[in-house]
Length: 208
Image (cartoon, rainbow, N blue to C red; front, top):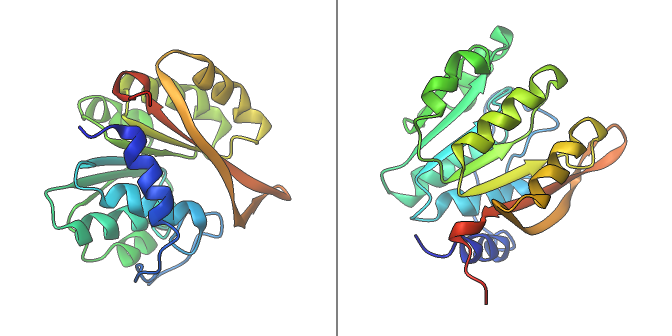
């Protein structure tokens, strides 16, 4: 694989360019990372890269956020790619189907994340978009993603106190290197801008 650092840095530049992004056809999740947000555009650009083939998103919500950005980017790249997202809220399934209609590269794993862990563990994951929305499963999900060792890990809401300890653990370990962090001005949570971090696996990182 191309140096993952280069993929991320190129994506940050790519996010500044004008292009046609996907239309949200169903309900929009107000905290979602759609392509109307800065981080959504970065996700689109990473997912569009020819060497980023398998992407996992936690979680789908209405299907209007990161998973839509990923689905559209993969479709536009014309490569053999696949995306997975998880959602357990049954009331959102109709909206997910509406927002992701026609994206045949997307697999929505319906139900609790613990039901699908054995499948997720078998994947060779190039990119994870990580925004745990439930404190109850935060630690479980964090350990699962660490075990999967995604090549690129986008960690959302790093300034949210309940998840900050795991973020500190991640940037302090030797497995990952933080390439950059920032905020999407369009997104707030608990009256704060939502900060994000982009990390890459250290064994795939080329120092220069």
